[in-house]
Image 1: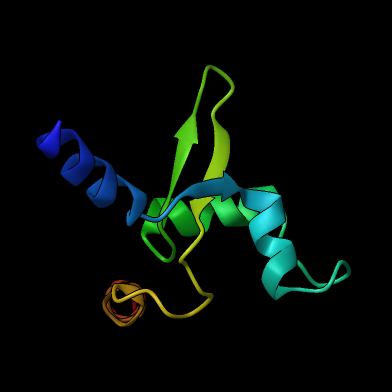
Image 2: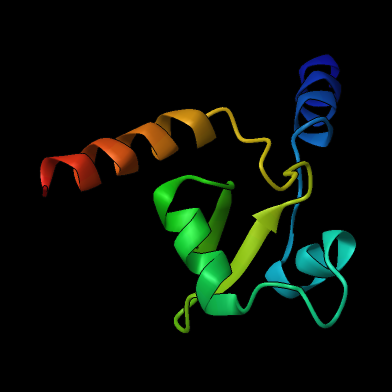
Length: 88
């Protein structure tokens, strides 16, 4: 039983998933929140961490994510800039 309580403590400290539109409402007003398509793009490029789940690929975002705070943001921006510069 001792190992079970340790495992539960580790699991409880992991960030939980929440529906993407609820996450967006935490940081944006109703008239300025990003659409689901934009949120999916952000998850796909690693801008924020989330998961597509189920047969309809419903989008969920980890509750600890903050807009513009992901550690990959700078690297992603640089990669996009380098890709665009390479097209010139």
